Length: 155
Image 1 (cartoon, helix red, strand yellow):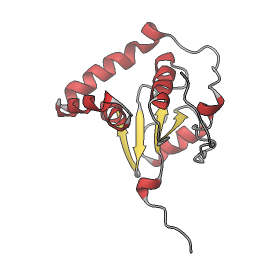
Image 2 (spheres, helix red, strand yellow):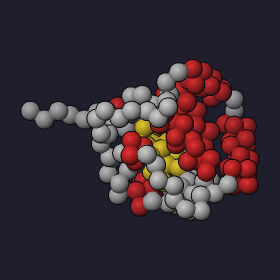
Image 3 (tube, helix red, strand yellow):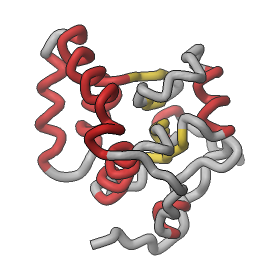
């Protein structure tokens, strides 16, 4: 008998700017605090990222937007960031209380950081290769990569 896959069984996908050092740092931060391996990652510029943006009717040329896809729903900017924090291990989920701040205010702060991230944190001139453990969590050609067994967090 085939088992049905429910939406909650699907990984949560995060689309990030692959050329942004802040975004790469955020990816590592999330992966380290995601003990249940619920998050998968893709660069906004990748084939998988572009296909997912099109599927969500989001612009494919806006690399200033952080996107979280969960159960077929797309969340962007501060909504995405706060929803990620809510799913992390540890006390990070307490920051989800900021969802009560009006969206316009939250996204003003998000947009300010997004506009200045290259100046403050720099860009990746060359693609930095993630660890094999983190690489297993990136989407390949739009396919959900299956996590390998015995993945250990970096310490």
